[in-house]
Length: 289
Image 1: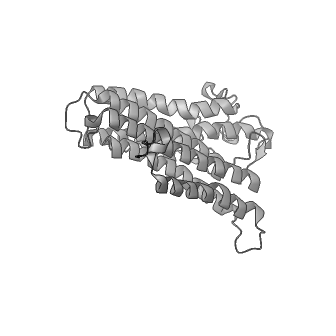
Image 2 (image 1 turned 45 degrees about the vertical axis):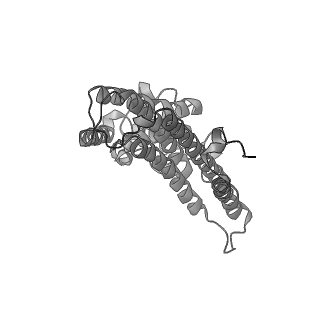
Image 3 (image 1 turned 90 degrees about the vertical axis):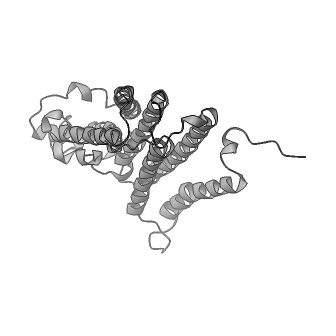
Protein backbone atom coordinates (compact mmCIF):
# COMPACT_ATOMS: atom_id res chain seq x y z
CA UNK A 1 0.00 0.00 0.00
CA UNK A 2 1.50 3.36 -1.04
CA UNK A 3 2.35 5.86 1.66
CA UNK A 4 0.42 9.10 1.72
CA UNK A 5 2.29 12.07 0.27
CA UNK A 6 3.84 14.46 2.77
CA UNK A 7 2.09 17.76 3.36
CA UNK A 8 3.15 21.12 4.77
CA UNK A 9 6.74 21.50 5.90
CA UNK A 10 7.39 17.77 5.64
CA UNK A 11 6.96 18.02 1.87
CA UNK A 12 10.01 20.26 1.57
CA UNK A 13 12.47 17.36 1.94
CA UNK A 14 12.58 13.61 1.95
CA UNK A 15 13.82 11.65 4.96
CA UNK A 16 17.46 12.10 4.01
CA UNK A 17 17.01 15.83 3.55
CA UNK A 18 15.39 16.32 6.94
CA UNK A 19 18.15 14.23 8.53
CA UNK A 20 20.72 16.59 7.03
CA UNK A 21 18.80 19.64 8.29
CA UNK A 22 18.62 18.11 11.78
CA UNK A 23 22.35 17.36 11.85
CA UNK A 24 23.29 20.87 10.73
CA UNK A 25 20.90 22.36 13.32
CA UNK A 26 22.40 20.26 16.11
CA UNK A 27 25.93 21.24 15.12
CA UNK A 28 25.08 24.95 14.97
CA UNK A 29 22.78 25.20 17.98
CA UNK A 30 24.20 22.54 20.33
CA UNK A 31 27.78 21.58 19.47
CA UNK A 32 29.12 25.12 18.93
CA UNK A 33 27.71 26.47 22.25
CA UNK A 34 29.11 23.44 24.11
CA UNK A 35 32.56 23.94 22.60
CA UNK A 36 32.44 27.61 23.54
CA UNK A 37 31.01 27.51 27.07
CA UNK A 38 31.51 23.99 28.45
CA UNK A 39 34.96 23.08 27.10
CA UNK A 40 37.87 24.51 29.16
CA UNK A 41 39.74 27.43 27.65
CA UNK A 42 43.05 25.54 27.65
CA UNK A 43 41.54 22.66 25.66
CA UNK A 44 42.28 22.25 21.96
CA UNK A 45 38.54 21.80 21.38
CA UNK A 46 37.58 25.13 22.97
CA UNK A 47 35.92 27.58 20.60
CA UNK A 48 37.17 31.15 21.25
CA UNK A 49 34.73 34.03 21.59
CA UNK A 50 35.93 35.71 18.42
CA UNK A 51 35.12 32.58 16.40
CA UNK A 52 31.59 32.50 17.85
CA UNK A 53 31.10 36.10 16.71
CA UNK A 54 32.59 35.25 13.31
CA UNK A 55 30.28 32.27 12.88
CA UNK A 56 27.36 34.48 13.87
CA UNK A 57 28.36 36.90 11.12
CA UNK A 58 28.44 34.03 8.62
CA UNK A 59 24.93 32.98 9.69
CA UNK A 60 23.65 36.53 9.13
CA UNK A 61 25.17 36.53 5.66
CA UNK A 62 23.56 33.13 5.12
CA UNK A 63 20.14 34.74 5.58
CA UNK A 64 21.21 37.37 3.08
CA UNK A 65 22.16 34.63 0.62
CA UNK A 66 18.72 33.03 0.98
CA UNK A 67 17.08 36.37 0.24
CA UNK A 68 19.21 36.80 -2.87
CA UNK A 69 18.35 33.28 -3.97
CA UNK A 70 14.64 34.04 -3.63
CA UNK A 71 14.67 37.29 -5.56
CA UNK A 72 17.23 36.31 -8.20
CA UNK A 73 17.09 32.54 -8.46
CA UNK A 74 13.31 32.17 -8.23
CA UNK A 75 11.95 35.27 -9.94
CA UNK A 76 14.95 36.12 -12.11
CA UNK A 77 15.35 39.65 -10.72
CA UNK A 78 18.99 40.71 -10.44
CA UNK A 79 19.02 43.33 -7.73
CA UNK A 80 22.27 45.11 -6.87
CA UNK A 81 20.68 47.03 -4.00
CA UNK A 82 20.42 44.32 -1.38
CA UNK A 83 22.98 46.03 0.84
CA UNK A 84 20.57 48.92 1.42
CA UNK A 85 18.04 46.75 3.19
CA UNK A 86 20.71 44.88 5.12
CA UNK A 87 22.10 48.22 6.31
CA UNK A 88 18.66 49.55 7.29
CA UNK A 89 18.13 46.58 9.58
CA UNK A 90 21.59 47.11 11.04
CA UNK A 91 20.98 50.81 11.66
CA UNK A 92 17.66 50.09 13.37
CA UNK A 93 19.34 47.78 15.86
CA UNK A 94 22.42 50.01 16.06
CA UNK A 95 20.29 52.97 17.11
CA UNK A 96 18.88 50.95 20.00
CA UNK A 97 22.35 49.77 21.01
CA UNK A 98 23.71 53.32 20.90
CA UNK A 99 20.93 54.63 23.14
CA UNK A 100 21.53 51.72 25.52
CA UNK A 101 25.04 53.00 26.20
CA UNK A 102 23.72 56.08 28.02
CA UNK A 103 26.13 57.53 30.56
CA UNK A 104 28.66 54.74 29.89
CA UNK A 105 29.85 56.65 26.83
CA UNK A 106 32.99 58.73 26.55
CA UNK A 107 31.13 62.00 27.18
CA UNK A 108 28.83 60.60 29.90
CA UNK A 109 25.79 61.94 28.07
CA UNK A 110 22.40 60.49 27.25
CA UNK A 111 23.12 61.36 23.64
CA UNK A 112 25.33 59.05 21.54
CA UNK A 113 28.98 60.09 21.62
CA UNK A 114 29.09 61.13 17.98
CA UNK A 115 26.18 63.52 18.54
CA UNK A 116 27.94 65.13 21.49
CA UNK A 117 31.10 65.46 19.40
CA UNK A 118 29.11 67.14 16.61
CA UNK A 119 27.47 69.47 19.15
CA UNK A 120 23.95 68.09 18.80
CA UNK A 121 21.71 69.33 21.61
CA UNK A 122 18.95 66.73 21.41
CA UNK A 123 18.02 63.52 19.67
CA UNK A 124 16.62 63.84 16.14
CA UNK A 125 12.94 63.03 15.89
CA UNK A 126 13.57 59.78 14.01
CA UNK A 127 15.71 58.47 16.89
CA UNK A 128 12.90 58.79 19.38
CA UNK A 129 11.45 55.50 20.50
CA UNK A 130 14.55 53.50 19.62
CA UNK A 131 15.43 53.16 23.28
CA UNK A 132 12.82 50.40 23.17
CA UNK A 133 14.02 47.05 21.80
CA UNK A 134 10.60 46.18 20.40
CA UNK A 135 10.51 49.38 18.35
CA UNK A 136 13.98 48.65 16.97
CA UNK A 137 13.06 45.08 15.98
CA UNK A 138 9.83 46.17 14.33
CA UNK A 139 11.63 48.96 12.47
CA UNK A 140 14.28 46.48 11.27
CA UNK A 141 11.52 44.53 9.54
CA UNK A 142 9.04 47.22 8.53
CA UNK A 143 11.35 49.95 7.19
CA UNK A 144 13.18 47.74 4.63
CA UNK A 145 9.87 46.18 3.61
CA UNK A 146 8.17 49.55 3.06
CA UNK A 147 11.10 50.89 1.06
CA UNK A 148 11.16 47.74 -1.06
CA UNK A 149 7.42 47.91 -1.65
CA UNK A 150 7.51 51.56 -2.69
CA UNK A 151 10.56 51.09 -4.92
CA UNK A 152 9.26 47.87 -6.43
CA UNK A 153 5.80 49.28 -7.03
CA UNK A 154 7.01 52.15 -9.19
CA UNK A 155 9.72 50.08 -10.88
CA UNK A 156 7.50 47.16 -11.84
CA UNK A 157 4.51 49.33 -12.72
CA UNK A 158 6.84 51.13 -15.12
CA UNK A 159 7.85 47.72 -16.55
CA UNK A 160 11.50 48.25 -15.74
CA UNK A 161 13.33 44.95 -15.96
CA UNK A 162 16.56 43.28 -16.85
CA UNK A 163 19.81 45.22 -16.68
CA UNK A 164 17.94 48.52 -16.30
CA UNK A 165 16.42 47.32 -13.04
CA UNK A 166 19.86 46.25 -11.82
CA UNK A 167 21.32 49.67 -12.62
CA UNK A 168 18.51 51.46 -10.78
CA UNK A 169 18.97 49.32 -7.65
CA UNK A 170 22.69 50.01 -7.72
CA UNK A 171 21.98 53.74 -8.02
CA UNK A 172 19.62 53.51 -5.04
CA UNK A 173 22.36 51.87 -3.00
CA UNK A 174 24.91 54.52 -3.88
CA UNK A 175 22.51 57.40 -3.23
CA UNK A 176 21.55 56.14 0.23
CA UNK A 177 25.18 55.40 1.06
CA UNK A 178 26.13 59.00 0.28
CA UNK A 179 23.18 60.21 2.33
CA UNK A 180 24.19 58.19 5.37
CA UNK A 181 27.79 59.35 5.01
CA UNK A 182 26.74 62.92 5.84
CA UNK A 183 27.03 63.93 9.49
CA UNK A 184 23.86 66.04 9.20
CA UNK A 185 21.83 62.89 8.57
CA UNK A 186 22.27 61.83 12.19
CA UNK A 187 23.64 58.33 11.72
CA UNK A 188 27.27 58.79 12.66
CA UNK A 189 28.58 59.79 9.25
CA UNK A 190 31.55 57.83 7.91
CA UNK A 191 32.29 56.27 11.31
CA UNK A 192 28.78 54.94 11.67
CA UNK A 193 27.39 53.56 14.93
CA UNK A 194 29.95 51.79 17.07
CA UNK A 195 31.18 50.90 20.59
CA UNK A 196 28.11 48.88 21.53
CA UNK A 197 28.09 47.71 25.13
CA UNK A 198 24.85 45.98 26.10
CA UNK A 199 21.65 44.52 24.68
CA UNK A 200 18.55 44.63 26.88
CA UNK A 201 20.79 44.82 29.93
CA UNK A 202 23.09 41.95 28.91
CA UNK A 203 26.77 42.74 28.45
CA UNK A 204 27.75 42.08 24.83
CA UNK A 205 31.30 41.27 25.95
CA UNK A 206 30.18 38.27 27.99
CA UNK A 207 30.69 34.85 26.32
CA UNK A 208 27.20 33.71 27.33
CA UNK A 209 25.63 36.72 25.59
CA UNK A 210 27.65 36.10 22.44
CA UNK A 211 26.63 32.45 22.35
CA UNK A 212 22.97 33.31 22.93
CA UNK A 213 22.96 35.78 20.05
CA UNK A 214 24.78 33.24 17.90
CA UNK A 215 22.10 30.60 18.60
CA UNK A 216 19.35 33.11 17.83
CA UNK A 217 21.07 33.86 14.51
CA UNK A 218 21.23 30.14 13.73
CA UNK A 219 17.53 29.68 14.53
CA UNK A 220 16.69 32.73 12.41
CA UNK A 221 18.61 31.18 9.51
CA UNK A 222 16.75 27.89 9.93
CA UNK A 223 13.37 29.64 10.10
CA UNK A 224 14.19 31.76 7.05
CA UNK A 225 15.29 28.72 5.06
CA UNK A 226 12.14 26.74 5.86
CA UNK A 227 9.71 29.63 5.39
CA UNK A 228 11.18 30.82 2.08
CA UNK A 229 11.47 27.27 0.78
CA UNK A 230 7.84 26.57 1.60
CA UNK A 231 6.67 29.91 0.16
CA UNK A 232 8.58 29.35 -3.07
CA UNK A 233 7.19 25.85 -3.47
CA UNK A 234 3.63 27.03 -2.88
CA UNK A 235 3.97 29.78 -5.47
CA UNK A 236 5.56 27.42 -7.96
CA UNK A 237 2.80 24.85 -7.52
CA UNK A 238 0.00 27.41 -7.84
CA UNK A 239 1.51 29.55 -10.60
CA UNK A 240 4.01 27.40 -12.52
CA UNK A 241 4.09 29.72 -15.53
CA UNK A 242 4.91 32.75 -13.43
CA UNK A 243 8.47 31.66 -12.74
CA UNK A 244 10.15 33.64 -15.48
CA UNK A 245 13.91 33.68 -15.16
CA UNK A 246 14.51 35.54 -18.39
CA UNK A 247 12.14 38.43 -17.57
CA UNK A 248 11.32 39.02 -21.20
CA UNK A 249 7.70 37.93 -21.24
CA UNK A 250 4.58 39.97 -20.54
CA UNK A 251 4.60 42.50 -17.70
CA UNK A 252 1.43 41.23 -15.97
CA UNK A 253 3.49 39.42 -13.33
CA UNK A 254 4.59 42.60 -11.62
CA UNK A 255 2.34 41.90 -8.64
CA UNK A 256 4.09 38.62 -7.90
CA UNK A 257 7.54 40.13 -8.26
CA UNK A 258 6.53 42.99 -5.97
CA UNK A 259 5.39 40.55 -3.29
CA UNK A 260 8.60 38.58 -3.48
CA UNK A 261 10.69 41.75 -3.45
CA UNK A 262 9.01 43.12 -0.31
CA UNK A 263 9.22 39.73 1.40
CA UNK A 264 12.84 39.41 0.36
CA UNK A 265 13.72 42.81 1.85
CA UNK A 266 12.04 41.86 5.13
CA UNK A 267 14.43 38.92 5.23
CA UNK A 268 17.34 41.22 4.43
CA UNK A 269 16.50 43.53 7.33
CA UNK A 270 16.53 40.58 9.76
CA UNK A 271 20.21 39.64 9.43
CA UNK A 272 21.10 43.32 9.37
CA UNK A 273 19.50 43.65 12.79
CA UNK A 274 21.25 40.56 14.16
CA UNK A 275 24.70 41.51 12.94
CA UNK A 276 25.52 44.55 15.17
CA UNK A 277 24.59 42.75 18.39
CA UNK A 278 26.03 39.37 17.40
CA UNK A 279 29.44 40.67 16.34
CA UNK A 280 29.48 44.12 18.06
CA UNK A 281 30.52 45.34 14.61
CA UNK A 282 30.28 48.94 13.54
CA UNK A 283 27.18 49.87 11.56
CA UNK A 284 28.37 52.28 8.89
CA UNK A 285 27.19 53.44 5.45
CA UNK A 286 29.69 51.22 3.62
CA UNK A 287 27.61 48.23 4.76
CA UNK A 288 25.01 49.32 2.23
CA UNK A 289 27.38 48.68 -0.64
